[in-house]
Length: 109
Image (cartoon, rainbow, N blue to C red; front, top):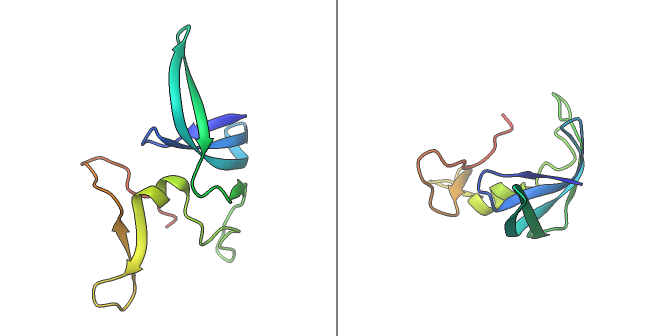
């Protein structure tokens, strides 16, 4: 049981990783933290929404993956998809304010 924490230090994925590779994980939120004999300990709450358990799934040229419409937890807190200016296509818009150097979203391009 290991957690990967996003750069916002509030959101993460907790689950099973083998040799640094995701096997199965779910979204979590950091709800408490403390130092214990020089080791940082974190307490997690369930992320919102929690209905997704991600499993290792590799996309390729012909397979988009099992979760093409599911936003990962950090992205869900940071951006949303809406009509672009002029309404011809979808656009990506900020849900919150960002500082220079902040991670906005991960791209699968």
